[in-house]
Length: 144
Image (cartoon, rainbow, N blue to C red):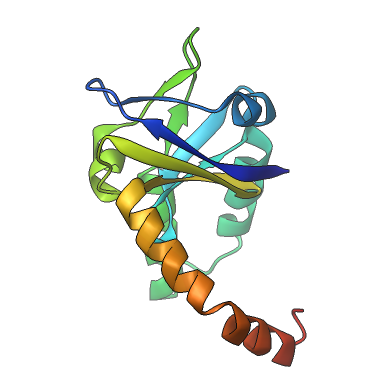
């Protein structure tokens, strides 16, 4: 399970040092792509395979399905760490997430999210303020 939060610096060559615990758990064959809320998502090979299987079941006749598959898959790129544990963030993904020099890695179960530090700070403040209301809504539908 990928959990935890780590802050790192994006260097001038668009490389990030992937936290060692995430590097170990993601293994070889990891994939990075666009995520929701203007972050990036890193999936292990096994998790990515499960995502591909789910997207294959979506109806190509439905506009939302086509759009989401395009959003997720067209931006995807293989992610490989160098000998120092650094990964290269493709330019199109760096621009999508508006990554500055300070970046947050957030482990969220089946994936690692990559956020611009300022965006992460703003997002977490909002979510922390809504925790009780979210719990109530999720409880009402049986999710908690």
